[in-house]
Image (cartoon, rainbow, N blue to C red; front, side, top):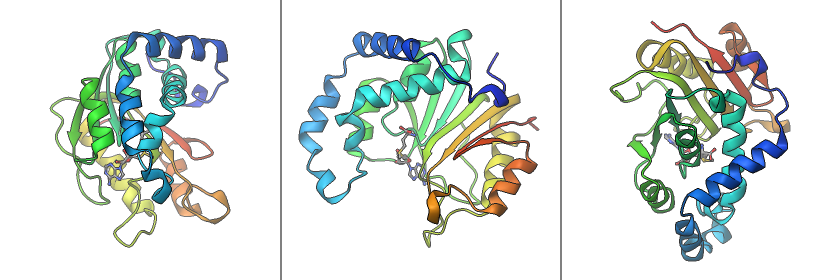
Length: 226
Ligand SMILES: C[S@@+](CC[C@H](N)C(=O)[O-])C[C@H]1O[C@@H](n2cnc3c(N)ncnc32)[C@H](O)[C@@H]1O
């Protein structure tokens, strides 16, 4: 059983996070990250948030994903179906697999760094672009949890952050077409607004109206499917 949204933000045991991350780092061959870091490091000179930053500092990013998995309680159950939207290097699916879960990932096609890391680790990635008002692809199964961390897809063509209507469309799509009954959604938004805000008042009210448990840019929902 997954963690209930309201306790998802509880304090985690830091030693446990480090221990689990260490096991995963030792059990898998991360040499691909070193190779890609050497090849693409220069991209950071032009784009400070280029994908290569995830492979340069992969132990920290794996630890972050372990923290997310423990927060969800994925170490206390097994065999869940999880969808990770905009997965990047796929470290979260890798951690899910470590705990015996099945994780499908989605990301844009063709990024050389993300693509090679996810391929190396055998992560199941569906190539698609998330856009406001556009349904997600059919994944052929329903999920116990949908996650999206460090979200970068919530901008319109004019680069304006999504409004509440765009979030409503995504949540409705997830509820109707992708979640199992009582499935959980965990969104972690980036800072899009002045003053380090992750959303405006309208979006915040919408999240709350859907029963979202909010902390900073992190919002968790348990929505009844259908
Ligand atoms: C900041 S990275 C976060 C990666 C991962 N979720 C994590 O937390 O480590 C943002 C990811 O969003 C993906 N992305 C950006 N816009 C997208 C879109 N419109 N549809 C799908 N993925 C998108 C990028 O390719 C990248 O993998």
